[in-house]
Length: 91
Image (cartoon, rainbow, N blue to C red; front, side):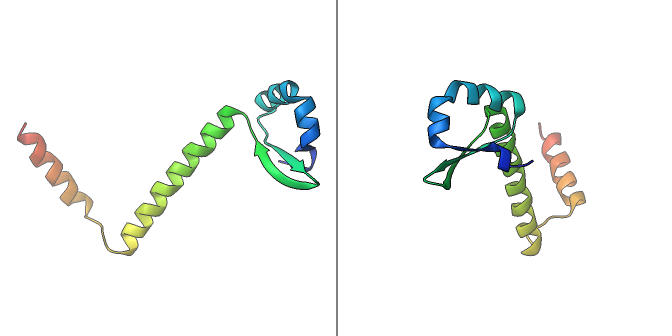
């Protein structure tokens, strides 16, 4: 993805907001908005945003799992399966 073609000043965004929103949904690429020549915001379509949030959630889960392994907070799979079967048998 090339951000260079997706960089627009805030004045362009203000003047063309509806068109930009349509383009974001169609192209599914984020746009960088500048103010006084500096990047100040990134906008993207909602579907891309939701995918990003889901990816971040999965990465957080993986990081948590890695930390648990590093600190020795793990239980062998056979032990977990045995516990689950015992709980299931009591129902």
